[in-house]
Every structure is written in C-alpha cells, then in structure tokens.
Image (cartoon, rainbow, N blue to C red; front, side):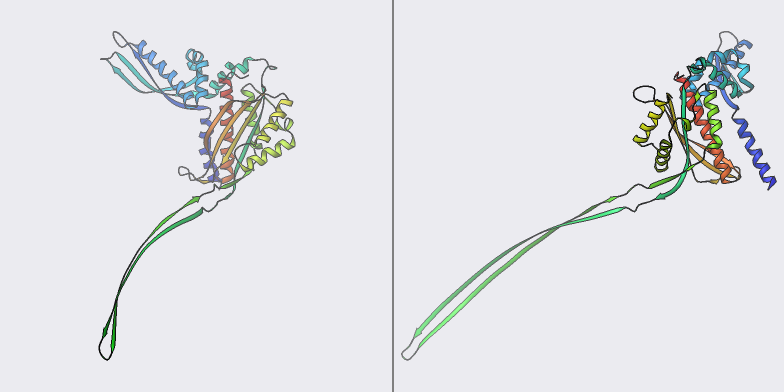
Length: 371
C-alpha cells in the first residue's frame, strides 16, 4: 500500500510543478539581404522565444492574450527573467528567398509572468482604498439523482366513408280474354326487371405526436473549504480586496443560493436580486459566481488511478451602477483530477478547476481595466 501511495505521489509531483514551469514551442523567421550572419540568427532566435511566450498566453484565452500585449515590451527586454531554458528544435535557411527560420522549445517561468502581469494591471496601480472589493460564490456540486420520464405518445385515427347506391326497377304486364259459346277464358302475364348497383369508399388517416420531457436533475452541494483559501489568495494577488460572503450575505441569501444551485445551474431572479441588494448595502461592487460540476469517477487509462472530471463555468457582475452588468465570464471548461481513490481525485479536480476559474476571472478583470 505504501509503495502504491508513493508511486501516486511521484506521478502527481510533475503535475504540480507543471503549474509554475511550462514548456512551449515558438518559431522565428527573419530576412537578410547579403549573407546569413550570426546577427540574423540571433534575431530569429529572439523572435522565436517571444513567439513561444505569446503562444502560451494565446492558449490560455482571449483575456490572457490581451494581457500579453500590455507587458510585451517588458518581456522582450528581459527574456532571461521569464525563460529558464531554450532548446533549438530545427533550423532552416531558405537561401533562394533570403529567409532564415528557427524553431525552439522554451521553459517559461509562469510565476514570474503572473507577477509581472499583476504589477502592470490597473488594480495594482491603484491605491489600496481605490481597489475594488469582490465577493465570490464558488459552488461545488455533483448529481445526486436523475429522474427520467417516458415518452408520452398520442395516437389519432380519422375515418370517413361514402356509399352510393342506384336502384332501377321495371315491371311490365299484359292481360287477355277469350269468349266462346260456352265459356269465357282470361290470361295474364307479368315481366319484371330489376337492376341494383352500389359503390362504397372509405378514407382513413392516422397520425399522432410524441412528447419527451427533459430529465429532472438534482444536485448535492460539496464543501469548498479546502480550496477557499487558495481562491482568496488568487484574487488577493490579483490586486482585489476580497470580502468574505459570510459577512456580506444574509442567512436567507445563502439558503436561497443553495436551493437554486441544488436544482439547476442558475440563480432564480428573486435570489439574484436579493444577493445584489446585499452587496449594494455593503458597498461591494463585484460579484463572482462559479459552478463546479463533478462528473462520475473513472479509471485513468494512463496511470490506472481514479480520474474525476470537473466542469467549471463562471461570471462576474458589476453591481455598482443602477443596473448590474456582466463584466467578465468564464465559458465551460473541463479539468481532470487524478488520485489513488475517488475522494482524492475529486478534491484535486475541484481545487484545480477552482484555481483556474479564479485566475481566468482575475485575468479578464485586469484585461478590462477593472480596479
């Protein structure tokens, strides 16, 4: 058992280190007029390094890409501070076109990049009294029950008929009489002809409808106390003043929020209005909402350990004005937690997803100039 846990820890350590040091590829191309010189190669080498940093930001979303533009000058002038190592993968000299290209793989110091971003953001430049306060509600949950409904089938048959009948009848008769000396005789004959014909037709139409009702899904809320400190740290390091929701929202607000998220993915309008009014009363301008949906555990094909998927979505509302407005959003993104058992995998997935959502929210707020 100890060997298995040690193996699991060894497998998880590279994942944790990966969060601060990331390997990214980049390509740089330069043109030259006469001959290929060392200066031309060094220029392409530097362009490739900058392209690798830009690629890292581009892969992390639009907000991060916009943040790269704000610190690009600092990165280009201090590449050694942000790049730990560089490996040349390939070189190509197109002498006919007078172009030289080089492909590199660099190790980025992500922690240094994030610190530089935070120091360059509008919220970090503002005074402590000018920094925005925010309240976040991160709700972890998993499906507790699913109620499925059979399809409702309605059949309808319409029939119409038509009968046409013709009856022709003709009767002919004759009578005769003969008289002799001793008797009188009579005779009669009758001839009857009857024609009868009928036509019948029937038209039948069959149809109907099938109604399928969506599943009724209920959720069980999960405790988020293990990741609460880490989420608060992300927002605080991003330059925001975090207000604990327990001191801003009322008990009634918490009860309504829990009920709404237990039944669906959105807050009911009365609940959202009540939460906004509580924030306005405490003069907190920003509200961060996020749901973290935990999937069913499964075996990870690479490690053989348990793997749990967590899907996170989020949005940020600015409630400082007369009407709340959405200033940032996090589209549905899926993260995976891996561990020796289901509980460990779920907790790791929740933590990774919550931290990623908090960083994305902070990045989008910084990119929007919110402070």
